[in-house]
Amino acid sequence: MGEGLATYFQLWDLRVAFDLNQKRRPLRLINSGDFHQSWKDWGFPPLAELQGLTSSEWDPDDMGPIAKRHYSAVESLFIHLMASEAGRKEMTACLRDLVEGRTPEIGSRPGDADRIEKEWRTQVEKRLVPLARASSN
Image (cartoon, rainbow, N blue to C red):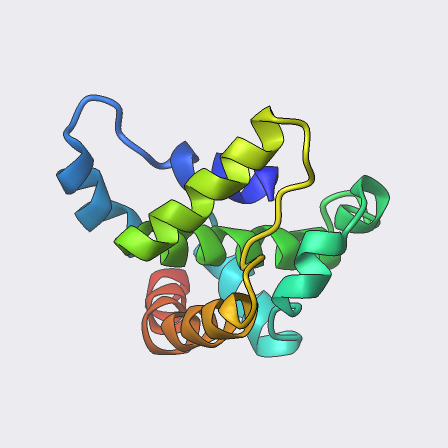
């Protein structure tokens, strides 16, 4: 999940206010072409699978299609989480887990993972895939 956090903030503009970044960030993707291709060809892995990936599973093909799929998936997940107060609280809990030496898990409370996954995938399909398609053409 650390890569999702890093990827999300890679396009964050530290010179402007939080609110402006909140408006701008969902309109930009690190690599629209890879994002669109990954979604079109394979879709994104389930949330539980993403969270369970080891380092070698994350990038088994030296930044090939599998790694690009993972990066695109977590970028979209963090765009989703940062879009709402509830999502930001979820991220805060994950960061707290990291700082306190626990394995972070998005959606650790009963029922949360399913809800987050459904909302995330809806946002990907309705907002991010059309953005990626338009940006990569």
